[in-house]
Length: 257
Image (cartoon, rainbow, N blue to C red; front, side):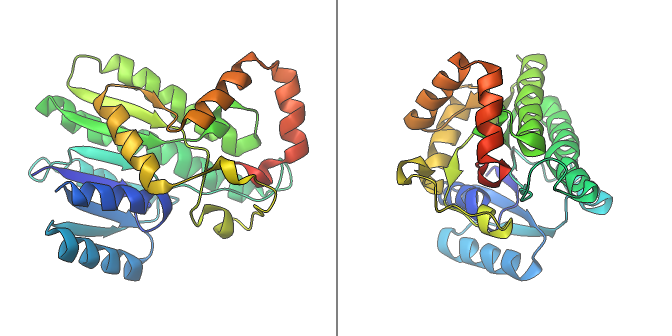
């Protein structure tokens, strides 16, 4: 039986991955900061699907948290076959409205943690000749949206480059780029969502099903909805200067997950 490790597993996209993978019979390593919610999640998934669900309490904005997950990913006696780097958050406010400490914390979680955990996982996977990594980015990676969008753009570029370098090794890497998803993401960041049209909202469970299918097909970037694929097609044809102006007027407050 294979094992998947999911960061940010207790809510939103991470929880949807946990539900889907458990239903498919995968054992899980659930990673988040909230001990109580992790325990409840692990018990529920074990009781419902009969899989083993271990918990790892870790804050990926800290050195200790990243190191703890690195060590688990490097455990050759209990290998991880699929890593889902999902942990992330958004800051409310435009550039220079957010404290430098908060900006650096975002980079720690979105970039340093993703780099280190992906590296720890793929080193072990390459030696076994199989495995997969899904790094959760955002469609915000494709438009100028301050630090959040820039960090997600890094995730996309890094994942594509690493996938190319590991081509033929049996290890697959994919950047998942969702749009607006009905999760706790915006509420936690204190972001309003009243002006977001209903058609832009995605269902987390459907998104995850598409993402896993895209990984199996060998895609390195997944935009898991026809509406957002069409929207990103328009973005590619729009001058960068105009995109920057549109992004500035809407503000980072409404950046997608």
